[in-house]
Image (cartoon, rainbow, N blue to C red):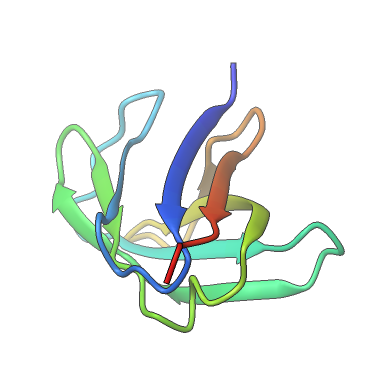
Length: 104
C-alpha cells in the first residue's frame, strides 16, 4: 500500500517524517528529498534531515514554495551512504504527497 502524506497549500508544517524500510543505518550518509508533479516536472530536489541514524528515520521540512501548488505529487528519499552507494526509499513505489487547497 502506498504511503500518503497530506498538507495544505502554502503550509510548511508538518514535516514529512519517513522510516526507511528495510531498516538501514544512516551513519555517515546524506539524504535528499525528491518530489515531482503528475507531468513529471520536478517540484522539489532538496536536502533532507536524518532524524535517527539507526534505524533510519528521515524528515523533509517543506518551504512555502514546495507547497504553493495544489495537486497530487510523487516523492522519494534518496540516500547516499558513506561509501558512495545510493539507495532510494521507498524502493517499491513512491510516497504520495497531496497538497490540498486552503480556504484563505
